[in-house]
Image 1 (cartoon, rainbow, N blue to C red):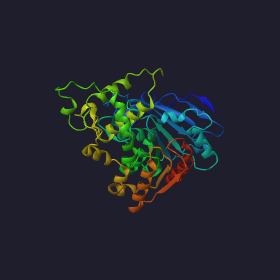
Image 2 (image 1 turned 30 degrees about the horizontal axis):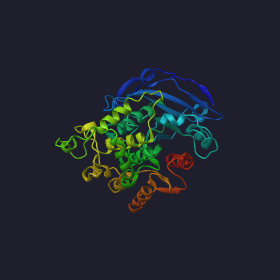
Image 3 (image 1 turned 180 degrees about the vertical axis):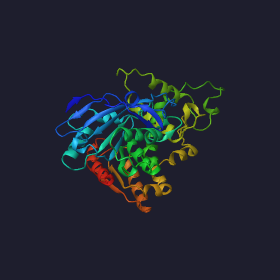
Image 4 (image 1 turned 135 degrees about the vertical axis):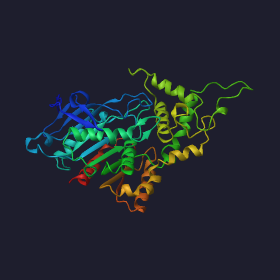
Length: 398
């Protein structure tokens, strides 16, 4: 693929959330073009978000949003044609932007789209790659007072932005999202909570059955966080833990997060696998049980010292488990034009058990969906998009 640079040709003023912005100054940006024979190209916008402004983690609110435009988009004969739009929701520790990277012995997502479209496995579509990375390693694409309003960021800012800048079919009937792991969870939540914005979703190995997917990891994480606890007090001294509300941090989580924040970005001291797992579960706590008055802005579902599960706090997590949300959101899920779920039956996080339960709940409530299992783990499953992307494109086509 050749590399080209483009900038917006016009200086029109468009409206995002009713606020006029200069398309060249606040939205427009240089782009990396990816062109193969009959291939599409990537345009990258720079967007200043009002929704993410002053977010609790101090993450930047000026973000890149990359957009794949199929080859047909630039054909003069298609100047008035509008396209189905798909949004790629990245998994934890990732960003949509990373899916544009070169891959050894494999194809990146734009190359996959070129192949699927070029071989007529699916019609030309626009695909959006938002950046929703945070200091906690990512988010679950729902609003959280401890992380930020990432559901609002997507639904209220990015979708209107893309519809204003490109020739999209600007309605839920022709807009879908897909993702793996946390991205799959996010896609599922979009279908459950925002069917007025999304018309079809694909959920690859998305988090569900929290007792398995998260519960099994907490003992190791609690042991890892023990390394950030203060030494035991002398006999007769009252411990900090004894003064805490159940689920509050005794200081070790704060010290761990400070350690992560101060790691230099030069690669000299990268996070360990234990660091990543601890960071992930803390990000989940900040997502599922935020509380502005609590230390670090969220509660923990386990006692840091004894490892006992705090049932009142765990119930807050379970409210977000997709398995438990089907019934209440049946009226939204039945509006979807397409719902695709798959998972490897050797998933190391045991998500296949949750995916099976989710499919059973959908069937119980007469919600049409397509569920598949395959021989695979939680890793290296991008080949499943050869099935899900054509599924979405077909479901959303006029």
